[in-house]
Structure formats: C-alpha cells, structure tokens
Amino acid sequence: MRSKYIGIAWSVFLKSGWGIYGYQIARHLGLKTKFTPVMLEDIGLDACDTLESALISNVIERPLQQRPDSLIPFKGTGKRLPFPVLHARGGDVRPQFSKHSRGVLGSRNHALTFFENANVRKSDVEIYNNFASVTAGSTWNGDLLKAAGVEKTGVIFQGVDPSQFHPAPKKGLFDRRFVIFAGGKMEFRKGQDIALAALKIFIDRHPETLLICVWGNQWPNSWSYGQFAQSPHIDSVPLSDATGQFPLNKWFGAFGLDRRNTYAFGNYPHSETQGLMREADVALFPNRCEGGTNLVAMEAMACGIPTILSSNTGHLDIIHDGACLPLRSQSPVPSPAPGFDTSGWGESSVEEIVEALEFVYQNRDAAAAIGLHGAQKMHELTWDRQVSELLTFIESYGLS
Image 1 (cartoon, one colour):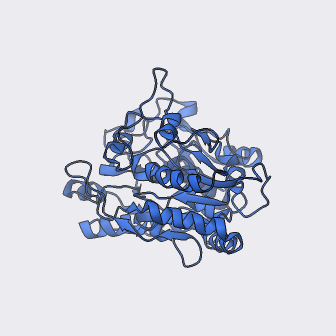
Image 2 (image 1 turned 60 degrees about the horizontal axis):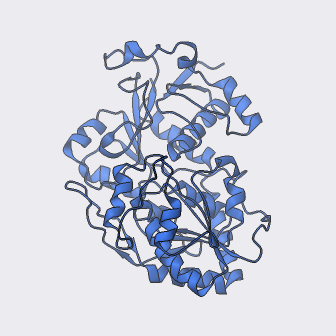
C-alpha cells in the first residue's frame, strides 16, 4: 500500500533537461518504489510511451488538477506540506520551471541543482544550507559547492533510458552523406558558434557532409543567448525576425552554409530523438560549459554514435578512454559580466574539432568501435540506477 509521498516542485514536460529529469524521477518513484510522486507543477505525458504514460498517470498525484488553488496556503507562509519536497535550482539558486509551487515548503526540502557560474556567493551558500540535502548534477558543480561551504552535498549524474537509446540500425535516409548530429539549446555556453566555424572548414573539404541539428531557443532575448556577442567566430548575433521566428538560417548564412549542408530543427520530440541520432556518423558537442553531464550527449553516446566532446565542466564526467573523442585543447573563456566566474569553462579549438571529424571520416570502423564503447559506458548510467542512487542519498538526510 502506498502511504509515503514525495513532492516534485517543477513542471515536467519532455522538452527540457529539467522536464526529462522530473519525469524520470516521477516514473521511478511511482513504478519502482513505495512512494507516490506528488506533482506540484504541471506535468505533460502526451509525449511519452502510451503504455508508460497510462501506468504513470495511475500512480502520481496531481493536486493542481483537482484544486488549482491548493498550494496558495503554503506559498511563503511558513506552513509546510505534510511530505518532503524536491526542488529544482539553477544559477543563483533560482527555482527552475516553478510557478505554482514557488515559496512552498515540505516537511523536508531537498535541492537538485545545475549551474554554470563558478562564483558561488555567500548568499547562495546560506540558501543551499537551508535544504536538508543538495544534489549536484556534475562533479564540477559538486566541487564548487563543497569548496564554498555548502553542507550535505552529493553528486549524482543524470541517466539514459537504454530501452530507447541504444545502438540499432539506421534507416539510411542519407546514405550518400557524411552526417553530423548536434543538439542543445542555442546559447553561448553550448558552443554552436564553435561548431559552425569548424563545420565550415570541414564541409569545404567534404561537400557531401550534412549537419543534422536540434538547435532552438524559446528565449532568444535571454542573457544566455545574448552572450554570443563575445564569440570570436561571429561579427554580430543573429536576431529573430518580426514574427519571433528563431534565426537558425541566419546562423548558417553567417558561416557560409545553406540548406545543401544543413537539416535543422528548432525542437524535436524526445521520444523520436534516438532515430534522428542514429542517422549520424558522428555527434559533436564543443560546449563551453555544462552544469550537468549534458543529457543530449549522453543519449547520443548511448546510441553508439562516435561523439566529440569538449573536455570541460560536466562533460568530464562522461569522458572515458576509448569511449568518445575528447577535445583536449581548452582555452579560458572571458567572463561575460561582473560577478560571473567562468573558471572551468573551456573554449574548444576549431582545428582540433576538424581533426576529430576527419578521423571519423577516414576511420569508420575505429570510430564505430569508439561509439560502441561509449554506449557501454552510458548504459551503466541507467535512469533507474541514477534515480535509485538519488533516492538513497536524500533518504540519508531525511524524508519525514
């Protein structure tokens, strides 16, 4: 009989890393444990497997669906819900994807965090230390928190679903092309400008190359997108048009690329991403910074795609000998603003990216072996294992 509840205080839609993380926590709690997940924000299951969605719908509680104002008595009042709550925290310990439950506390409160600013301020430490525990999504984040004085800090990586992301035959939709996959929100820290600078050189050598990318940004006016102004690879940041359409074509045009060599999506259904990845010969992630391990990169590796990864921040947790192609040359990245510390960030070498792509192009069998080893390493990090580890960690600091 289910008698124990755990609240999840961020919205869960399979369009973001936080959404996937929340879904996997709710899935594991509801289907694998004695706990009932209580969704304190909106949840969308329409993009999930139909059977799994039906099962999860039967084992989660959605108080906002029955009583939209049910959390109002708990918002900033000091009155606590009668069960523990998991909270999503980003830079400056800001709540993530939290609207209805902002200011709501549980009987015990546990923080899950990913952040990019290496400057963990004294005020941040005070907020973190008010939580019963703090779970960082990468060793880099965990080390920063511990060094700053955040107590009860653990490091637990995200996971992959091996039933979805695993090596399998490709459809062969681009048999005459050399296909590169890239994915991630379009923002400076993700390094799309670095990727395009390298791709321009490589495509000039190999005109049959095709970039398949999922690069979108729902917030093109955001500070993280505006940081591209400090890119050494572009003269000006492409802006959205009058309709608000994200300017991917302007990005390609800025690097002399066009539709002959690009197949771009602003977003893509997560349940179908594995099919997109498997069409690729190589995946490319020259990211400047990852507060977590980079979920999209993990999923590409899990599919057996030879993957090029920048050797910095959270990527270091998924770089293993012979399991990927690491970009070892990492130059410092200037701070974009006062108080923002980019220690640990890395600017990947365009020339090293081109060399890595050339290696895969010229050595398909050796690259495939790297891809298979990468899949083996990622399959050690299943979502069930990682969420179970998370639950064990937060239980050690109290769930009552």
